[in-house]
Image 1 (cartoon, rainbow, N blue to C red):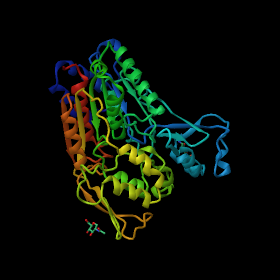
Image 2 (cartoon, rainbow, N blue to C red):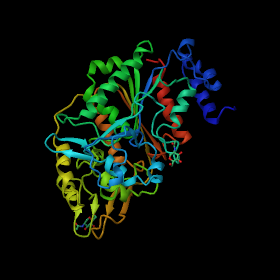
Image 3 (tube, rainbow, N blue to C red):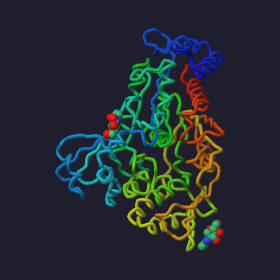
Image 4 (spheres, helix red, strand yellow):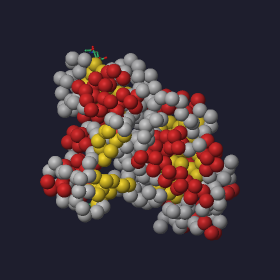
Length: 438
Ligand SMILES: *[C@@H]1O[C@H](CO)[C@@H](O)[C@H](O)[C@H]1NC(C)=O
Ligand SMILES: *[C@@H]1O[C@H](CO)[C@@H](O)[C@H](O)[C@H]1NC(C)=O
């Protein structure tokens, strides 16, 4: 097979890099993964990929305690594990969407300040550890590292040897300090073991942790919440974040997703509005609301009757006014002033797209939150506002550990890891860190 233009460019790039990297050229053009035993990729630091929000397959099991609101939704009761968020086309084909919405739903437990599954539904994330087991969308094969992973493999990376994946429960977000989360405690323990394993089978090499979008936020929170600084220094070579969701700055799109419904879970035949009742139960739906420290002046939501700024009070009113009063308490608890937490001390590279219209304000003129809003756009990557990226940069610069930030003009949130030019740029950054140039 002929070498693709992409690989030719990469080959040129490799010539500019140190001698150790040039060894990859034959391996890369043969498109044959190099084995650890032949020395070619002995130099590669292992990579653990933490994917974007829609990329983790979920299985469910219905117990006797499950009381379906539509009788046919109980058909799988007592029949073991089945794919719940696995094949979205199949949900539509089997007319399972209403059942899917109920069985995916979370229920907030105010006493424990923790989110639980719908009663009688057990869930688990599939394929933890593997870089090849992410959710696939036949219409968007490029999503969920569909293009990044094969390129890494052409450069010598091998799933299970030097390349790993860490999917998570997309409905939940890492807890704030003091908040219990059995799901995330377990996930962070698994991720710790995976990283230690990746290091131990590669002659104690440090690991590159690579997070995309929601996965970027999860990877960073993992270091902050669950990885002591000495452990970080021992095991993590570099944290690469591509379009990470900014936790403290927030951004405007989550408000639109909460009010009008989110398209993150792309289910054929279902609209964001029709999936909205499910979406609003997710802990991740309340995550990332814009912070008043960054979104200071302009109202985020406009109606004829009143405007809502990013202030905590306005956002709480908005939640109640759109009919989600239940969400006010968990929102308030997530927003309260947090004790200082430990920092990610490892070197970080962050890549964002800019120059794409990104929602900044939504007008629901008649106060009808089921109607499509009139949207005012500003700069960003189509999802994350530029102001949020800059606030994130500032936050990362203040912590110990070197920080490099790259803005790719014209790359959008969805296309950054799919378009050849921007993917190439990201792989350059990864290669600089993945090879032993300390
Ligand atoms: C997903 O479901 C659709 C509809 O039932 C089916 O045609 C398709 O083969 C399934 N895809 C996979 C990968 O199982
Ligand atoms: C809401 O904000 C818009 C834009 O900033 C402004 O023109 C309008 O007067 C405000 N409306 C109310 C009711 O405060």
